[in-house]
Image: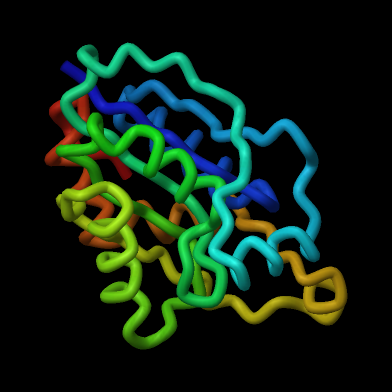
Length: 178
C-alpha cells in the first residue's frame, strides 16, 4: 500500500511542497483544480459565505492507498474552499488522512483546522502539520500579496522533526531523507 498526496495551491507554494513530499514519500500526487480561474474577490466571497466551489473531478483508485495527505493553504484560519469541497465530496474515503499546510502559524489555528476537518470529513486527521513561513516578505511581495516558497524553505521544512516523523510513518522508503 502507499500514500496519496492531494493538494490545492493558489500561488504555487503548496504545489512546491506537495511535489517535494511526493518524491520523499514515493507517493502519488494529485492536484485539485477548478473549472474557472480563482481570483482574490472570489476567495473572499467563498470564505464569507462558506461556499463550496466547483472542482474538477479526480479519478482516484482509493483502494490502492492506505494514507492520504491533504495539502492546502489556510486563509484567515479557514481551509481553502476548493480543498473543503474535495473533503466533503470524498469524506467516506478519508478515514486515515493527515493535513499539511504552509502558513503564518497563528495562535489557535491548529485547533480551528482540526475542528473544520472533523466536521467536513467526519473523522479526525492522524496529524496536522503547519509549516510556518517565517521569512518576512519583501516590499514587492507585500505589494503583490504573494510569497513564493523557495527550495531553502523546503529544505528547512524537511529538517523539522515533525516532517521526519511523517516520513518515517508513511514513506515507501525505509530510510529517512534529508
